[in-house]
Length: 442
Image (spheres, rainbow, N blue to C red):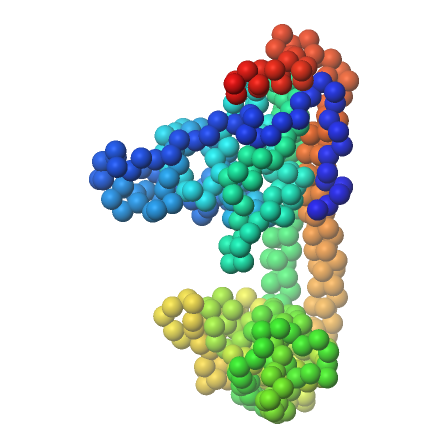
């Protein structure tokens, strides 16, 4: 657990209680009492966007064909907290009235705040706080679908201020998050603009009148090897390994994406990868076929896999960097897309015959070098900007968690704001709130 996200002791006028103390449990469905052909709206984990933490859709079923997990009746203001893979933050608050008295999956813990004690938005903010999520992550059991139980969630502790203070905290969180979200939206827009600019740069390779089939610039093209390998990556370059197709990214080769060759298999050395080789994926999911990269560095004893072509170019015809930029440009992505064979998006092919017949630009070597230099110079600026944006997005998420931490330590409101909430007729200290909780449970 990140110790920085463990809250300090809350103010003396707050209460510290479990979620079970301030939540009302949702009712369960009694299927035998329901009309089999009656329809209902159904929310499951796929209904939630775990980035915005909002409900983005639903399914419709009748009780005759309803999923077995359709078990809980929900209301507006409920918080749906996915108990599977807690760290993914599949959490959302029910705000749309169309979901009132509808059904959600048993894969959620339904947190329904007792509004006499806890503001629903205060509870919702707390479920997004990593100081709440991290202890639950440690309680997960199971390998394929690590999950926590409802009881684990309800047993978690929440620092609880008086209701007027909760409302003020919620308002301030929403104000600060709105400002933060605007900044994040601007950063993401800049990211998209950089992608467009990158593609415009790569298009510069086609500014020439000379085009020839790829076959004419290829010295050697080979398809790799597909032995049954160990799932774990090799630990050092003394071991032989075969790359995964995920090692081939647009303009980037990740040599760490590999599978160790079993000791009882002799390596097919002819497939060993070298600096200067071009790799292009030839089979697999549609979005992954036709991805091209140049190997600029590679450790020894790494072999090509059978789902990628390894291309070695005629050095007097074309520069490897120029070839890579060309293949990753918008025009050639479109051409390759049109050449893919196969019906299902989960499995298509790029045939060697079709690929080698593609006409590509081949200006004089000196001109190629000038184009490569210009593109690389500008791409390096893009890389720096993208890294800065990525760093800023990480800081934004850290700031979001910092805001929540301050909120649940009683440090988010300033003295003027605290004075205002203490003058509210509903304000009462922790002792009174605890007494109220106790009276409702006895």
